[in-house]
Each structure stands twice: as structure tokens, then as C-alpha cells.
Length: 463
Image 1 (tube, rainbow, N blue to C red):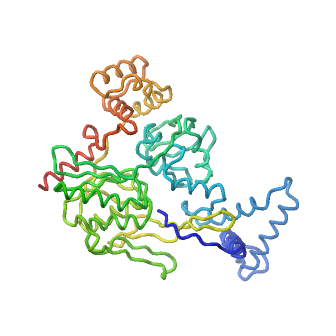
Image 2 (image 1 turned 90 degrees about the vertical axis):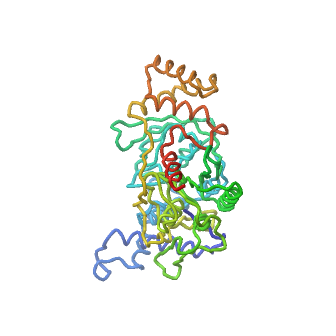
């Protein structure tokens, strides 16, 4: 998750110093120089000298002229890459602009949160109601090719550039998925990605309130508070907070939302290299809305960062039950620092710790009750991918606009004729999802969502 400080102008000499400092750190990680320095270790002065030697050779003697800004930007990227942290990165003017586009909640793309894990471009979470989720991408998928070009060594910034584009255009990707022997190929049509932060309802024939949070934005705490206040007016007796596929967002939003359920005690603490910046976030009793109402958190492998702060706080305080699957495991805090010349860095400054003082970074949080979702078989995944690529599914829904038994049987006959059969679950789920695409999508799925079914069952037993 990213904390966004107030923009401050930074003098040019500080930027130059930063670049030099990078070179010193980066060069220092590569070992020893023979000769002048004590014990063979490179010193600050030697590293500075070495950097400018290389810079002059490249500028004067390299076979082609390379712009100075590209050389320096590359040097800074190398410094940040030397940290080994996939979330720490440099943004040139174009890339910084891309980040600012992200924050508007509307852009042309696929709708996935991506990261670099084990030096591989990895899906953290597909965003709900986007081309990526409809295509069938899953958390943990390794994107090994974009437009038939290898992603080995690619940066997050470059991957975003390749995946984004004009709405209506197509992009092809190749994916390796754990448990699947063959590479999966997807051709996905880009779309405008609009992120609706919340959705809620009272589950039919129950007094259980359901609220789904898709992103920890600046408005999320006030939106969740309003929903919970409405639940109180409706005399709701239990609440399900759905954080599945939520890749995170703002730290402060996670703290405020946790505080709506937790009356007192530590919610999360953050610690970094400089102890002066360490913080402990505690619940404020004046801000709690539902301190005692039975609560279930739904989370999964697509729940990361701020989602894990809320899940960890609820679990550690025994405030509710976590149902689902193990979370993603992103427990670090990034600060976006604007620099001169319309550039910026996203710098990991701290790790966060749950109330029980546990860091879940790269570990995730285990559920109290594990419930795995219904899954497509290997044949389902292959055939579903082809059905979408050939637009058989999409064209069927254009002429059969209702999700009912008659259309289920018609679709079954059509895909069997095309020799692309699906299992009963995959067939119905695919047709239902495509039929209810966008604004028509129901808030909850009581037909196939076994994790939600388990949460309702658990809360009914609580009375």
C-alpha cells in the first residue's frame, strides 16, 4: 500500500546527490575492487570516481549516443533494483503520469494488480468486473509473455505500459499457473477500468449484512461507515466484510476501517530502519460503529496489503472469523516521493506488524476456516480460454440476454457442437458471469460462492 505525502520541491543538488548515493550503494553490493581501498572494499570516494569514469566512457566512446537522462534514469533504476524489493521503483515522467492515472480510478487496461515475485511478473489480484477477471486470470499467475515477447527481467513500469492501451484493443499474454502443466494463452480486450469501491446488501431471508470492499481508497472509510450505519438502522444482527481480490490501498484507510469494528487496542504497527519513524496505530473508541456485532471476514490469495491489515487486526483481537484461503502476503509500506523533473520514487520505508507483532510479508495470513472456491478443471480452463478468444461466449450472451435454464441448455449444446465442452459448474459460472457483466451483476452469488455460503452458515449458528 502507498502513503502519499504532500508534494515538495527538491533542489537539484539533492537529486544529483541521490543519484550518486545510489551508485555508491549499488557498486558496493558488487563486491571488491583491487588496489587502493582498505581491505579491498570500495569506499564512497572510489565509487563516485568509478561512476564518473563509466559515465564518461559511455558518453564519449559508446558506439551510439545515449541521452544523458536515459543514462541517469538507468543508474537510478539500478540502485533501486539492488534493494531486491519489487515494490521499490523509480518513475520517469511518463511512468509517474501513469501512476497518477491509476489514482483516478478510470483507465484503459485489463484490470489486474501485478508485482514482481521471484523475478517473475506475477498477478497479485484481478479486479472484479474487469476483462482480466472475466478472462479467468488468477492470483499467482505468472505472466511469461506479453504479445509473444518474454517478460523475463521486465520492470513493473514497462509491464504496465505493455498491458495498458486504448479501450477496445486486444493484448495477448501467456501465463504459467501452478498445478497446470501447459502454458495458458489469453487474448484480452482492453476496457475502461472503473473501480467502484463498495457494494452492499442485506442477504435475502436473513438479518446478515454483506459489504464488499474492492479498494482501500481515500473515500473507503466513509463509504463503509455509511453502510454500517445503515445496517444498524435495518437491525442487522451480523456482518460479512468481503475483502477477496482486494489488492490494498492506503494505510490510513485500513486503520480507519478496522476501527469501525474494533473498539480499543493496537490495530497495526509499522517499523522501519529509522526507529524515529515507527508508529503504532490504535483504535479510537469514539470511531467504532459495530463493536460487538458478529463478524466474518472473507479473504483469499488476492487479498493483499491493506486487506491483510484489517484481516490481521480482526483475527488477532478475536473480533471475528476469517473464512477463505491464505492471503497474498504483502506487508510492506511504500511512500511515493515526488522528485524534480516530474519524476518520483516509490520507496519501501517500513514493514507492518499485526497486533500480535507478526510480520506477514511474503507469508500471508491463514484463515480460521479454510474454504476453497469451486474451480475449473484443466480442460475447463483450456476450453474456456478458446471460447472467449473465439468470442463464442460473448456472442451467445448478446442474443440470449437471460441467465435461465433454457439458455443454459442452449449454450451447452452450442459449445458441445464446437467440441469445447465445459463441466456443469464451469458452464453455468461462465454463462452467469458473462450475462451479469457490469451493472447487471448481482451483489452476491448464492449459487456458486461456497465461501459466502460458509460465512452465512457460520453466522446463522451464532444466532
